[in-house]
Image (cartoon, rainbow over all chains, first blue to last red; front, side, top):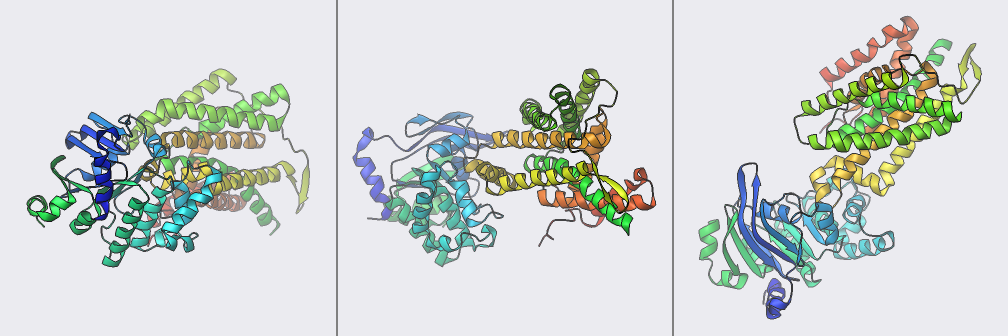
Length: 253
Length: 286
């Protein structure tokens, strides 16, 4: 069984009694008059890895931004652990346990590695801060030695690790990962893939936006294929591996 | 030679007060992209509040603190009620809004305190002799105090939890929001800090030349010059530019009148805009 499917199946076996970590229900988002999402519905179970696949402009990043409160849905509901967070401010959503790693390795380049991590863990109490830093450094040992280094001088892969590590500082229950392997060398892609698996082993649910189809099929339990702001197809990664015609149809790969 | 040394001290003292004013202006610009044309008027109101508290209590340091707190609260209220709704709009809209606030504050000061000059007595009396010239201790104390306040601000921004919030929001507000930093609250806090710095500068400057309801415009203009020369939004650059411009003015005052020496600031501004629009005190963009 592929890594992400374990969480998916255990969640499904527990059936409807278990509240999903994230439920997006009939959500529409507009940028001005332009429709970015239309009637989007999806769920992510506890510890599950769910991937959004789709061409550029399909609405994948907007979905993540809507969940973390950076854009407001014009319609629909978003629930985190059963609680409606549709109109909750972004800072409260993060504090509740939703980590967001935006597209493009968006770290604070003028900050040191340590300062970036402290920003990520700004709601963690002083007594727990050392513990959280230690936990993050265990997962990302390369960052331990780079603590005083300006983040802008890290390599692309290290910056991506830092962005994920920063989101991990809050001990999130779900991480929204937006194209974490974009523009990285194959060696770094493998490292990021390993990190995704490690997060999954720690029981963190992941909503992953990715263009890298092999990585998606390896990591995810379920895959939503999006087009023009809506879900066009939904299947388990096992189903998609067995029959890749859907991927060819929507992504042309 | 003696005159050059005296003017150097004079330039540094004036530069430190100007640096306090400019630091607030540049913090606000750096984080909100707002050029606050009412900044000098917050200084003016702070000076009047300080003069009033001094009149009642006779305690200069209490007046300094009261002015900073009162104007910080006023700044926070103005940010929430007037500027927050304008965030993301055309920059001209916020410029006009702050210009409007400037006029309102001037007229309020005229109504409340009248047109005559208010004096703030020096809390540190006495002079010392510097190359046959009597130089007031208060001016030196002002430079030292301004240096301590700016140092405190730097330490807060560098090591304070909320200082890191401010620096993170200045670098990338969307990213800061994604990290769970309450960006609207940070905006309000920065405006309050900038206002408090302006008010404290007003009380510190009060004993130099008195307090009038028109004193704010001159400070807004001079602070704007050093913010541009130092690099918009760059706190360290603004502080260095304040001292640099004030020193140039002080040296120019040796050969021309102090009123004419101000022209030097404008020349530096124009040259900066022409040859290094990112500012003189920021690293060269790679």
